[in-house]
Length: 459
Image 1 (spheres, rainbow, N blue to C red):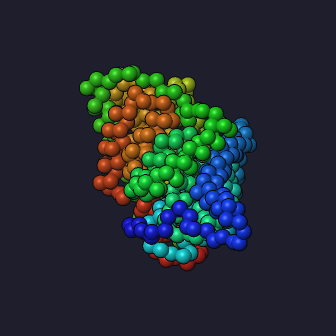
Image 2: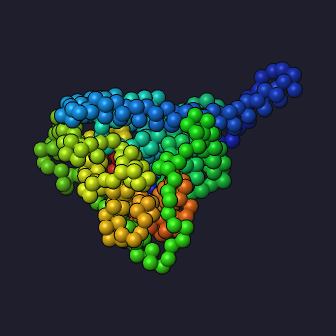
Image 3: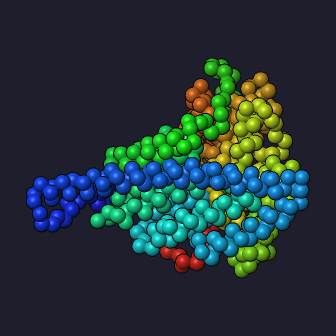
C-alpha cells in the first residue's frame, strides 16, 4: 500500500485579508487561524464523542427491544430477523453503498489507496453517516451478530472528514489527519479506551507515526473522551477483572495454548470472510449477485435459526454473555464459541453495516471456557482476558491494539505481559494462513476503481 506524501498540512495557510485598520485585520486573522487550528478539530471531536455515546445507547435500546418482542415467543425471530435483514440489505445497496460492514476498511482505503477523487464521496459524507447509523440499528433490532465499535470508527472518521469543507485550502495531508483523528476518537468513545484509540490509529490505520498527525489525533481522542466521560461516566466496558497479581512459570503454557487456539479460530474467520466464494453453496452465490433480497432472506433465517437453537445465545453482539462470564454471574454453553463464530460469519455475509469487535471479544470469552477445561487450576477470568485479546488480535492482526483494548476495558494491568505475549503469538499464527482482515477487505473492495453500484465483500 502506498501513502500519499502531499506536503499540504493541517496548518492553515495565510488567509486573505480585506481593507481596514491594521490591528483589526490582525485580530481577524488570528481569530480565523485559531478557529481553523483549534475550533474545528475540537468541535468535531466533541461531536464524535456525542455520537459515540448516543449510538451506544440506541444500539442497546434496539437490541433490548428485539429481546422484548421475542420474549416467550422465540418463533417470532423467524419473522423479525429475516424481514429486517431484507430491509437492511435493500437500503444499503439502494441508497447507502459505502456504509456496509464495519467501516474500518473504508478508512484504510481512504488513507492508503491511490488518489481517487470519488473515493471520499463514495465512502464518507452525510449519506454514509445516516446509512451507518440507521441501517446498523435495524441490524441490532433484528438480533444480528454485529457490533457497534467498527461503525463508530467509521462514523468518527466521516464526521471529522466533513470539517475539511470549512478549511479555505484542503490537501491530502489535512484529509489524512482528520480521518485518523476521527477514527481514533470514535474507538475511544465506543469503548472508553483512549489509549487504545491512539494505538489503533497508529497500528491499524496509519502504519506510521508523524508528529503533526499525533497532535491532532490525541487532541481528538481527549475531547471525544471528555464528552463520553461527561455523558456516560467513567466506566469499565467489561467490568473489573479479578486475577492473581503474580503468575508463575507454569502460566506460560496456558498463554501459548490460548494464543494458538484463538489464532487458528481467528484465521478461520478471516478465511471465511475473504474466501466466501469457496465455501458458500452455489445457489447462494448466485442469489447474492442476482437476487440480493432472496439472499438476505436466507441469511436472516439462518441467523434466526441459530439464535433459537442456542436459546438466544448467538443473538446480538455478545457483550452481555462475555461480561456475565467474566464476572462469574453466568456460564455459557460449551458450544457457544463455535455457534457465535458461525452467527458472526453469517451476519457479515449479509453485507449490512455492523462491526466485529464486540462479537470477537465474546467469541474469545467462549474459547476461554475450552481452555479452562484443559487448565482447570488457572482462574477463568485470566483465561478470558487472554482469549479476548488473542482472538481479536488474530482477526485484526493488530496485537498492540487488541491487548490494550482488553486491558483498558477490564482494568487488567496485572495481565499486561501475558496478554501482550498471547496477542502477539495469536496474530503471528493467524498471519501464517490469512492476511490482515481489514487491509485485505480494503484492497479487495476499494483500492481499484469500481462503479458506484459495485457490491463489496462486506467487512
